[in-house]
Length: 157
Ligand SMILES: CC(C)(COP(=O)(O)OP(=O)(O)OC[C@H]1O[C@@H](n2cnc3c(N)ncnc32)[C@H](O)[C@@H]1OP(=O)(O)O)[C@@H](O)C(=O)NCCC(=O)NCCS
Image (cartoon, rainbow, N blue to C red):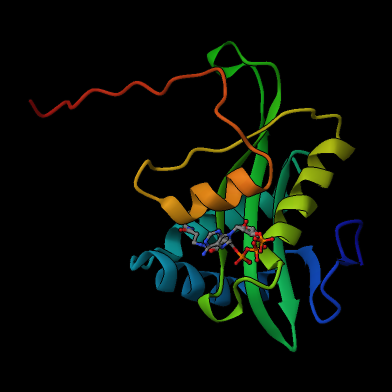
């Protein structure tokens, strides 16, 4: 059992680092939540997170009764956009049948603890303006608008 494998607030749920055997469940949950199956993406993500920079890349899953109920992935990114090192959450989902039981919050706190453990003091994520549920979730966990503004350009016109 590694440092991230620990009991969390929910008595029937354990938070731990992802294992290869979790990948099919992560792909299935992501597909259910986003409507878009991307097994190659998740396999590649797993390879990168499991094999390199384990002190900066964190991919946690919430497991209970032999089932994967959710996951959250993030990594430390440094010096891009003139930023000091900070922890980015870039992927997360809780099974629709397991929501509103504190699992998302446990994953959020778990990944925040991982970032703190390696000396990171700021955590960031990005949320589409139309995604009211993730926005409500992150706001309820204390996240607020940060100092950066995202800019983009449509290259087809
Ligand atoms: C956002 C998400 C992770 C929340 O997971 P969860 O386990 O249900 O969340 P929790 O039970 O820990 O809730 C934590 C807080 O979030 C907020 N929240 C969660 N679900 C909410 C909802 N449906 N409406 C409003 N607020 C909500 C609440 O403030 C809640 O605290 P409270 O229960 O004390 O009020 C989950 O709904 C999800 O996976 N959504 C889809 C995410 C997604 O689109 N991922 C793909 C893109 S990366």
